[in-house]
Length: 169
Image (cartoon, rainbow, N blue to C red; front, side, top):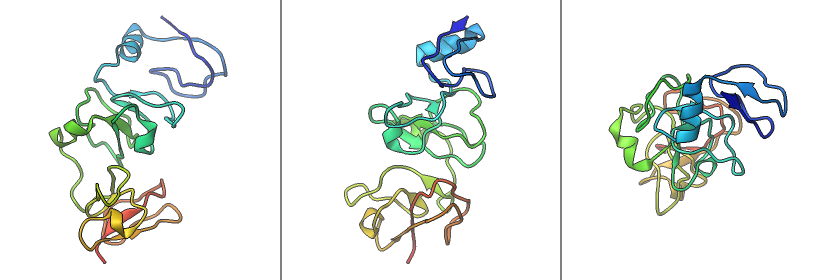
């Protein structure tokens, strides 16, 4: 099947650099995944506010990179993608339905995890982010601001996105 591209978007099921504006032949199964919007994980490329990802698509960095009310699930390894089928790429982040986040095991409470944009009305728990101030954290936790990729005190994992996380004082 010929996959028609509009610019620099990645080619489904392929790795490497595709030439700008060129179309490529892809496997029929990859074409069906792209067009169906099915629950199969799919690496679409870098999702942004202007190029939003749908359910089970990635790679997103923030909730605002996902369509409608989907959440950007931050992954650090081979964790499953709740509500999605297939084998996700290692450490890629995917847009998920927030109602399905509890259907698959997620990292322990001390594992760094981006869950949403945290605020006073929807605070984040321990080792969760992205918070902007202490009021975005549950209870008396504080918002730990990363200025560069690194580890977060009291949490497991290493963050490369400079997300800010809630930690105990």
